[in-house]
Image 1 (cartoon, rainbow, N blue to C red):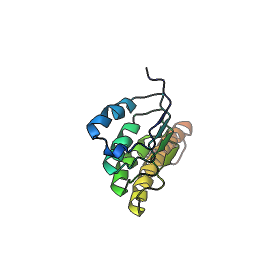
Image 2: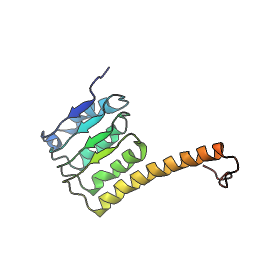
Image 3: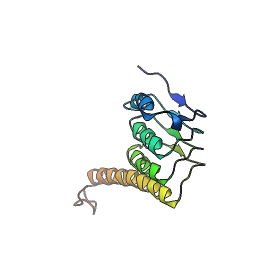
Image 4: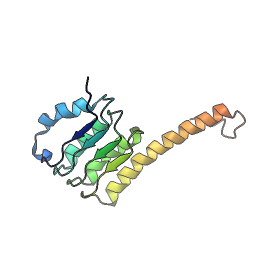
Length: 142
């Protein structure tokens, strides 16, 4: 059983490591109920590796902080981040400062955050309907 709650890989040039060597690390994140902080800053991580990190981080159920600052992540690397954000209600901090992100990448992030908010609102509406049978939204399908 893994007891690590913080994993820091800063300043290691991970983007130059072949993906097949990083895959066991990423697999270890999946279904992890302990890992709360992941930091991959200053690694020259590009879109492809960032996508793998975002996918793996979605399975870290205790993860509240993901730091990918000071890398070379661009807009296409954030498409997978949208999925992470839409599924990861537990994530409270996502640090992407000093990357190569334009307004398109920001839209990906906002889209994922909006999906998460929409699901939370759907849950709240379902709770409201159950709690208040006379609610005007009672006939709304959720």
